[in-house]
Length: 130
Image (cartoon, rainbow, N blue to C red; front, top):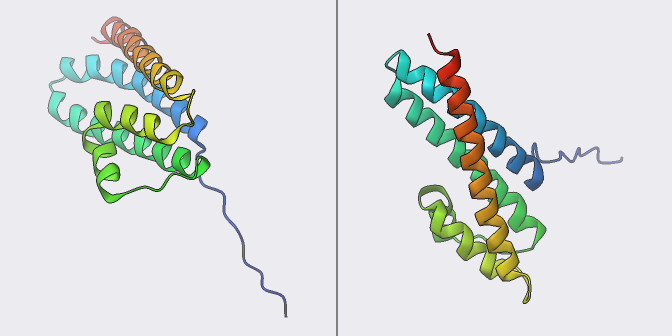
């Protein structure tokens, strides 16, 4: 009798997780302006932090699988709670020689792009808020 195991693909690839992070930055920028208008700042902040941490962790898991880099308990913890320090460390450790600096610079560029998208979202949020 033949085994009928179904292999499920992960819900998001590393690239799709990055796209979701950018989209979330824009939506969260819009929502932050609206939340401050209706006094839900803290709730919005907590929810947005959880979403960003989750999407960042999904990217980390998919990327570390793609580069066959072992995920230690401490690195996973840092990826959730100390992202700005953990991502450059991870990129510098997981990339081959000659690609380390480029990977860290791409992260910094992505970070700036995320801030820009969030700022644009905040402007739209202010314009749309009552």
